[in-house]
Length: 123
Image (cartoon, rainbow, N blue to C red; front, top):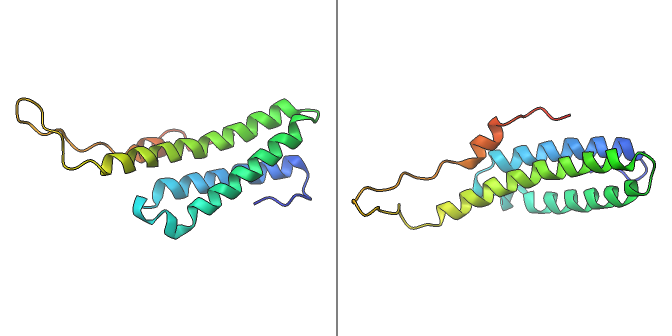
């Protein structure tokens, strides 16, 4: 996480790097092992840092652009969490639902793959 003595722009850049690393970890770690990798604690640290930076930069000159960068970093991580949550929820269903004609529904697609494939380059 960024040090509080760094200027806001350096801390925002560090937050963006942390967001990309955390996003990648959420999207590549097996769902059952997320806690084993400390991702919950890393996400909490990331959220606290993002909120502190947001509050600090909202009052400064150029605060709107800084806030947009912070928000974009947070949304990248949040999108990965949504994909993991949907995958975890789909794994809890017992078997595949069967349609009225007796055919089974295929297993849900791992949404993390579609999140990974969508733009991995961030500005």
